[in-house]
Length: 157
Image (cartoon, rainbow, N blue to C red):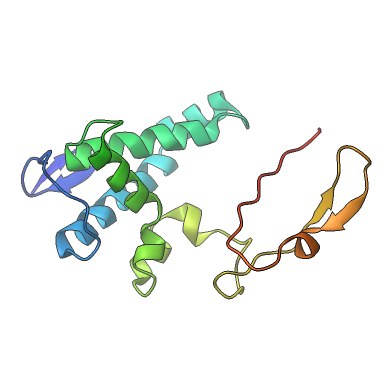
């Protein structure tokens, strides 16, 4: 096996590598990419990039690294359908393989996600909501009925 930019690959990646979560090869490559991402996130180089990007840009640094890992691992170019499929699978791998502990432990952003610890799937942590127009407060639970829902929020600070 050769190491390519943090990824161990048996052969050079093929642009024809189709994303299929049911294939063992897909699962293995996702694990390799997640391991490479974890190592990158913890590296001094990435920590410096996070620091330079600040609170408003560190997620962009993560997104760029994920795109790079998908390109290197699969051979797909950014902004192609194949790349988008792999990127989505990469970012949601812990949901694709919920019974595989590695997918819950390797990505540190999943392992240390405390907002949903102990909540059944499909539930959310209730949060106060304040209207910017009249400063009246309500709760997320009073607004959300049966889902699914997308919550978009921001801050006036």
